[in-house]
Image 1 (spheres, one colour):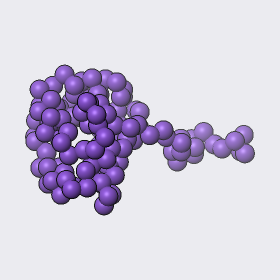
Image 2 (image 1 turned 90 degrees about the vertical axis):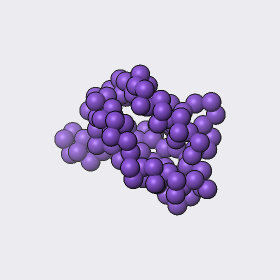
Image 3 (image 1 turned 30 degrees about the vertical axis):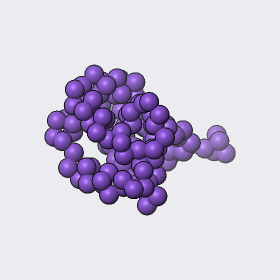
Length: 117
């Protein structure tokens, strides 16, 4: 399972709207995410609009491509795009900045540390 962490910037004047929309995500959007491999998906939002997302998936490419092929995602991205800064001509699901994972506790426990080897 691939662990994916990403960030986006919600416009500060649209934070409350962003929260409101995520308090009631459309059921067909939720189903589509689950069907296309977006597991253990969480979003975290700082007061200034910094959004950090995390999910686990067998394949990031398959998860993103799968959602890109759904009608519900096209509608969701169109409505959500107005809430973000710095997207240019892309949508939030295509324009996020993926963060590099540099530490994972379970991986290190399973593999040991350099000093132990």
